[in-house]
Length: 120
Image (tube, rainbow, N blue to C red; front, side, top):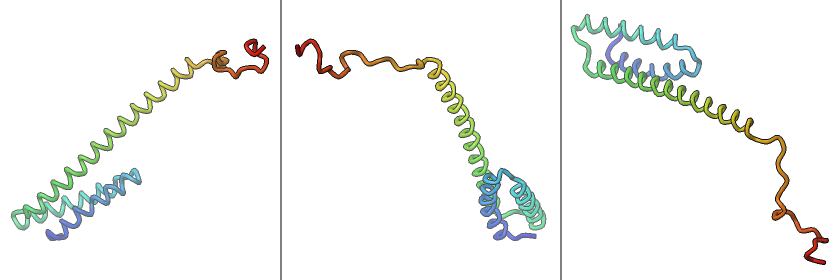
Protein backbone atom coordinates (compact mmCIF):
# COMPACT_ATOMS: atom_id res chain seq x y z
CA UNK A 1 0.00 0.00 0.00
CA UNK A 2 1.21 3.51 -0.77
CA UNK A 3 1.59 6.38 1.66
CA UNK A 4 0.42 9.94 1.00
CA UNK A 5 3.82 11.20 -0.17
CA UNK A 6 4.14 8.27 -2.58
CA UNK A 7 0.65 8.94 -3.94
CA UNK A 8 1.44 12.63 -4.37
CA UNK A 9 4.60 11.88 -6.35
CA UNK A 10 2.78 9.26 -8.45
CA UNK A 11 0.00 11.74 -9.21
CA UNK A 12 2.50 14.34 -10.40
CA UNK A 13 4.46 11.70 -12.36
CA UNK A 14 1.25 10.66 -14.12
CA UNK A 15 1.34 13.96 -16.02
CA UNK A 16 4.54 12.78 -17.72
CA UNK A 17 2.90 9.45 -18.45
CA UNK A 18 -0.01 11.37 -19.97
CA UNK A 19 2.29 13.24 -22.38
CA UNK A 20 4.22 10.05 -23.17
CA UNK A 21 0.92 8.38 -24.02
CA UNK A 22 -0.10 11.26 -26.25
CA UNK A 23 3.20 11.12 -28.10
CA UNK A 24 2.97 7.35 -28.58
CA UNK A 25 -0.81 7.45 -29.25
CA UNK A 26 -1.17 4.79 -26.55
CA UNK A 27 -2.82 5.65 -23.24
CA UNK A 28 -2.70 2.11 -21.78
CA UNK A 29 0.17 2.94 -19.39
CA UNK A 30 -1.71 5.98 -18.12
CA UNK A 31 -4.90 3.97 -17.63
CA UNK A 32 -2.99 1.32 -15.66
CA UNK A 33 -1.16 3.95 -13.61
CA UNK A 34 -4.41 5.73 -12.72
CA UNK A 35 -6.12 2.43 -11.90
CA UNK A 36 -3.28 1.64 -9.48
CA UNK A 37 -3.41 5.14 -7.98
CA UNK A 38 -7.18 4.89 -7.59
CA UNK A 39 -6.87 1.49 -5.90
CA UNK A 40 -4.19 2.76 -3.51
CA UNK A 41 -6.14 5.92 -2.69
CA UNK A 42 -9.27 3.89 -1.99
CA UNK A 43 -7.31 1.46 0.18
CA UNK A 44 -5.64 4.32 2.05
CA UNK A 45 -8.94 6.10 2.63
CA UNK A 46 -10.69 2.98 3.88
CA UNK A 47 -7.83 1.87 6.15
CA UNK A 48 -7.23 5.33 7.66
CA UNK A 49 -10.83 6.46 7.50
CA UNK A 50 -9.88 9.57 5.56
CA UNK A 51 -7.63 10.64 2.72
CA UNK A 52 -5.31 13.59 3.17
CA UNK A 53 -7.04 16.74 1.91
CA UNK A 54 -3.82 17.74 0.12
CA UNK A 55 -3.59 14.40 -1.69
CA UNK A 56 -7.28 14.51 -2.55
CA UNK A 57 -6.94 18.07 -3.87
CA UNK A 58 -3.85 17.10 -5.89
CA UNK A 59 -5.67 14.13 -7.43
CA UNK A 60 -8.59 16.31 -8.50
CA UNK A 61 -6.23 19.02 -9.79
CA UNK A 62 -4.15 16.59 -11.85
CA UNK A 63 -7.30 15.00 -13.24
CA UNK A 64 -8.77 18.42 -14.12
CA UNK A 65 -5.49 19.46 -15.75
CA UNK A 66 -5.45 16.34 -17.94
CA UNK A 67 -9.10 16.91 -18.86
CA UNK A 68 -8.38 20.51 -19.90
CA UNK A 69 -5.39 19.36 -21.96
CA UNK A 70 -7.52 16.70 -23.69
CA UNK A 71 -10.23 19.26 -24.44
CA UNK A 72 -7.64 21.70 -25.79
CA UNK A 73 -6.04 19.06 -28.03
CA UNK A 74 -9.42 17.95 -29.35
CA UNK A 75 -10.43 21.56 -30.03
CA UNK A 76 -7.12 22.15 -31.79
CA UNK A 77 -7.63 19.04 -33.92
CA UNK A 78 -11.13 20.16 -34.92
CA UNK A 79 -9.91 23.66 -35.80
CA UNK A 80 -6.96 22.25 -37.75
CA UNK A 81 -9.26 19.94 -39.70
CA UNK A 82 -11.65 22.82 -40.45
CA UNK A 83 -8.77 25.07 -41.54
CA UNK A 84 -7.32 22.34 -43.78
CA UNK A 85 -10.73 21.83 -45.40
CA UNK A 86 -11.04 25.58 -45.97
CA UNK A 87 -7.59 25.78 -47.54
CA UNK A 88 -8.39 22.80 -49.77
CA UNK A 89 -11.62 24.46 -50.86
CA UNK A 90 -9.78 27.72 -51.56
CA UNK A 91 -7.17 25.91 -53.65
CA UNK A 92 -9.87 24.11 -55.63
CA UNK A 93 -11.64 27.40 -56.36
CA UNK A 94 -8.35 29.07 -57.31
CA UNK A 95 -7.49 26.26 -59.73
CA UNK A 96 -10.91 26.54 -61.39
CA UNK A 97 -10.70 30.33 -61.78
CA UNK A 98 -7.04 30.68 -62.79
CA UNK A 99 -6.59 30.80 -66.60
CA UNK A 100 -4.19 28.33 -68.14
CA UNK A 101 -2.07 31.05 -69.79
CA UNK A 102 -1.12 34.40 -68.42
CA UNK A 103 -2.37 37.29 -70.54
CA UNK A 104 0.13 39.35 -72.50
CA UNK A 105 1.15 42.62 -70.86
CA UNK A 106 -0.61 45.78 -71.94
CA UNK A 107 1.09 48.24 -74.29
CA UNK A 108 1.62 50.65 -71.42
CA UNK A 109 3.81 48.18 -69.57
CA UNK A 110 5.83 47.01 -72.60
CA UNK A 111 9.29 48.36 -73.23
CA UNK A 112 9.34 50.95 -76.01
CA UNK A 113 10.58 49.72 -79.35
CA UNK A 114 13.62 51.52 -80.74
CA UNK A 115 11.63 51.98 -83.94
CA UNK A 116 8.46 53.40 -82.40
CA UNK A 117 6.61 56.04 -84.40
CA UNK A 118 7.22 58.76 -81.82
CA UNK A 119 10.92 58.62 -82.47
CA UNK A 120 10.61 58.97 -86.27
